[in-house]
Length: 399
Image 1 (cartoon, rainbow, N blue to C red):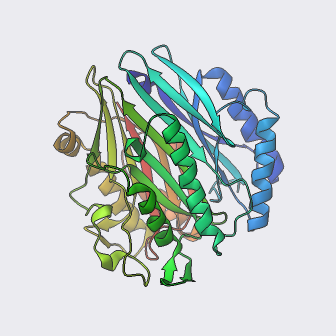
Image 2 (spheres, helix red, strand yellow):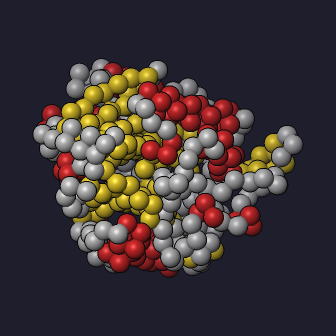
């Protein structure tokens, strides 16, 4: 898996903000240009600013049309389209995060299609491993404040099951999962359940699909974050060792209780059987053949133990970054993996900000930390999974 060292993550925005069509056209054309410069596009996420469910549905259709009309992109891996307004000085309506590999000499790859989803499969012949990057976005209009949300959640997991089964995998092979959840904090009355939060509904449905899997090697690293509109969109990275040198490890954080071990008091809703969030604080991939590794850091917030701390955005950001810095420290990684690694290259910084008015305080606090590639950090507006949490942060560390 040494080829993962050549990962580069690009933030793409229109330098001069315009209307949605102009910005989407520019950003997608830029991805197409970069796909000519770099050998392989692994995944891309498109963050959009929408003002209604109907407009978000129309914007998704426009994006798909632009992609299908672009010869460099129409057969590439499908993007995940996310209703989270980007926070940029120019008030941009579209920002794209795109993952590329700059060196593919050691691998073969194929892009496959199931229904409307194109995904990519990497095969490292020297280590006999398979890695899948896939993303799913609902193509139809979905009102996340109706029971359409439940069907959208089920559709997302059905799509993932189909892809994983096609590649001889199951959910235990997923090392990273992104869950974008429409109206995550919205509460609805459900028959025989009572009042329940969308995030809890999603967790219960996730458990239905996860329950048939052996999780002896831990859950995926994951983010569960709100979207303004739409049902559920998901992205995954799955890795399977066939006979080779790939090793995967769940990484815990002694500063926090594992999310899947939360007590019932932390779960929102009237139902007696509420499912905890099924994810690890991080998931590490290592090769036995060399020192290459990658650690996916889950969406992280100002939680110590299982309690939320800090009553202002600056303090919460500081606590969140302290959690991340310790999580991927040499001491902690060695404790949970038995491997010694000192991560210098950290990419894919995403900062989910609950309130736009608190953005500057959060950005200032984030910038105080001495970590790499902060300049490409993506800030978006999104609800975090608890009412009191103001910020959530994620990244990926590569060695």
